[in-house]
Every structure is written in structure tokens, then in C-alpha cells.
Length: 106
Figure 1 (tube, rainbow, N blue to C red):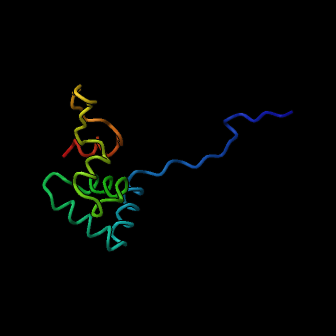
Figure 2 (figure 1 turned 90 degrees about the vertical axis):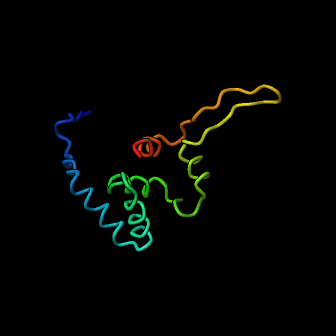
Figure 3 (figure 1 turned 135 degrees about the vertical axis):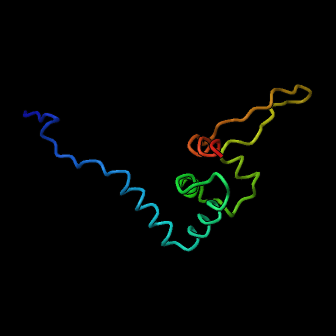
């Protein structure tokens, strides 16, 4: 039985981030719906191309759900833990971490 070392394996070098960023921007600009959403998002103060791209990629529901539904989906909606007469703490429960980190930057 012959064993191959990891050095013999051919791997492709990772793509530079500039190429990935260019491809993402091209995909957004080629789709009229995504472009309209991107233009709307970037019109807000503090939302740049990267934040808008993350939101569009991770939340395709933008524009179809209400603000409360999106906040719940992302995990930034307050949730109160209660049962009967017992009322617990009100917490922000993390559901989707990448969107949550992105929205905390806002």
C-alpha cells in the first residue's frame, strides 16, 4: 500500500479578496432586484458596499418581510422568557451570528 504525502497534493492558490469582491459586486449589479436593494441599503448613513453585500447574501428575505420579522430572523429582536406568572429576563438571542455581527456595526 502506497501512502501519499500532503506535499504531493496539488492545490489551487486561494483567490485574492479583490477578485471575490469584484465578483460579488458584478453579481449584484447584474441583477436589477439586487441592485435596487443594494442602492437602497447603501443610501443609509453607515452602510457601505461590504455591509450591504453581507446583508443581501445572508438575508434574501429583505424587502419581503417586515422589520420585526427580519429582526427576529437575524436574532436582534428582544425575547422575553415567561411562563404563567413567572417572568424571566428579556434577552437578545443570537440566531444568525454573521448577520447579527453585521447589523451591530450599524
